[in-house]
Image (tube, rainbow, N blue to C red; front, top):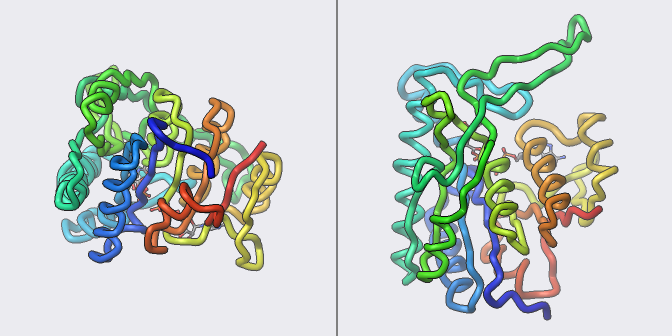
Length: 276
Ligand SMILES: Nc1ncnc2c1ncn2[C@@H]1O[C@H](COP(=O)(O)OP(=O)(O)O)[C@@H](O)[C@H]1O
Ligand SMILES: CC(=O)N[C@@H](CCC(=O)OP(=O)(O)O)C(=O)O
């Protein structure tokens, strides 16, 4: 068995993998156990569905383009409230209830992550012409300063990070949690990056799990539409993380009890392993 002592493992906890109270406790227990066994876990969380419900309650219409939420001024306020507020604190509380020492933060804290506005081009389905789409206050990490995380890891704390960050322009940016997790994993020289989601991994056209996915095949599956929606930023982040030298990048089902421990500590790799 491979040893993970003192290794940094970034776990991206997707909004779709949350929700069930018992599974939430199992996740918090796994993260606490990881720390107790010598691994340094860093949790980066999402909360897309939870942002969606809050926006709905407030009567704010929201749409996604290429897996990313178009984020206007009113929306980014709710995104920050839900991600850096309620979800972040809920995860911190549940890890601490299991005996861990979690501390919540977002990109704004300790200047952890700075954002720049994301520019995306997409092909218009009618004209087939590539166009620049304005996603509003959607950002991508421009710099990551891991000092705060390094200090926390040294003190045996478990950082729990929400993907909201300040821009150089003084605005607040909404960053896709997968992209954010990839940037954190790269800056920390993490040995593993695990994405906990609500499907067993990347599925092929027939809905069968792809256990090992090469970068070349991943590009093909994005191009032919087999990989779509929220799976696109996840797979793109996996590819970037591999290029940055993260050894093991896996997309797995957060609804499987103890998915993180099974993945790290048994030979029974669950999910999709991305490889070059
Ligand atoms: N080829 C694919 N394999 C698996 N899931 C896919 C695929 N293409 C699109 N998806 C969608 O991606 C979703 C996971 O991404 P997302 O909704 O952003 O989850 P999370 O909240 O965990 O980040 C799945 O629930 C599924 O609907
Ligand atoms: C720009 C963008 O799309 N941001 C995401 C941030 C949360 C997220 O990524 O949550 P999941 O991991 O649960 O999908 C959003 O607003 O939904």
